[in-house]
Amino acid sequence: MKVMKFGGTSVGKPERMHQVAQLITNDTEPKIVVLSALSGTTNTLVSIGDALSKGEKENAKQIIDKLESHYHEFVQSLLHQEATCAKANAILAEHFEFLNIITKISFNEALNKDILAQGELMSTKLFSVYLEEQGIKHALLPALEFMSIDANDEPQVAVIRQKLLPVLAAHPGIDLFITQGYICRNIRGEVDNLKRGGSDYTASLIAAAANCSVCEIWTDIDGMHNNDPRVVNKTVPIEQLSFEEAAELAYFGAKILHPTCIWPAQQEKVPVKLLNTMQPEAAGTVITQEAGSVGVKAVAAKDGIIAINIKSSRMLLAYGFLRKIFEVFEKYRTPIDMITTSEVAVSVTIDSAAFLPLIIKELEPFGTVEVDSDQTIVSIVGNDIAQTKDILSRLFDCLKPVPVRMVSYGGSRHNVSLLIPSAYKTETLQLLNKGLFDL
Image 1 (cartoon, one colour):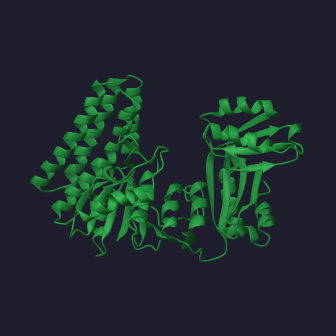
Image 2: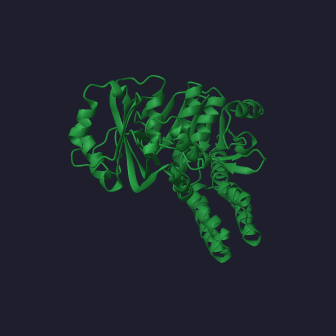
Image 3: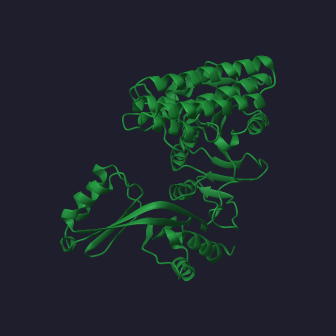
């Protein structure tokens, strides 16, 4: 059995949903298909929740009505038989009745999670009706029956496996299953979600839990590229990556794959393939235990970075100083991306300003605190590049015009990271593309 995950752009138009149906029936291997919400839906649902949280019920109602109209137009193009159209319209009526009811009751965060779940629920149900119209035998599996997170908002593969396998076994003779990405239940049994990029996470968790042969992530680009194609004109897809390389690239900005997707597949040694729905014949990228080759493979950039520098003479020859600094970030559950130290200073980077004022206040007793916003981490990733001859000289030769704020080298065998002002991001990626890949 394998998993095939299709993102919002892959199912965002009726003709794309038709194409997905063709892709999943092209081979006979049993499969679980994970779908995201139709493109744009989750953002719209977020807007509905935001409006309701501010008490703007009329505004929320207008957004709901516009979304409902879009879905009815979608159904008219998706389906062609009277019976299936009626079934799809009944599905829409049920979900939009729920959205309209919530404009009349008190809003809370638990209700907001219910709102956000509607996109995946509708996309999978409509796709199921289309498969029914085409006479394609399948079963629709409610993800809320087996996808769950614990008290720390983390999914556990063993728990998901325990719930998923009986659900699959309840459908003997079925080789095609459709389910929702992103959504789950929390420790209290309430509807919750796996945050942005959660559909990739769902696919990887299911592939690990069901010991699948492969986890295919279908998007609108032919694999992971050596650089950001939105910024750099000449990029090429990467044929093979190790899990470690892919994790570094995903975490440091490669948008095609969510960072959380790597861990479950890696734990169970399930290969991950990144494929293009619009160009299914393209080879894409395969992610496995093996890297395939040594050296620089790709560059990724992560924006929205904040650099914090703590300078104190008390740090000199003092043990326990760094532990106290890190405890501040742990207290506010704020991960650190990069760190550099000198005799009397430590610099760290974070990617969230949610608790920044509180963090600064607690760091001030340790020394002078300086904050630089609008920074970008540029990561150069490849198998064993820390041992690659002349890697640093090559990097800095091609980045002479760029003011590099921090360098992280040696912490990982697969990554060299640079902190630069965000204003230099485009120039940096273009210079690296020419200097490292001759493109």
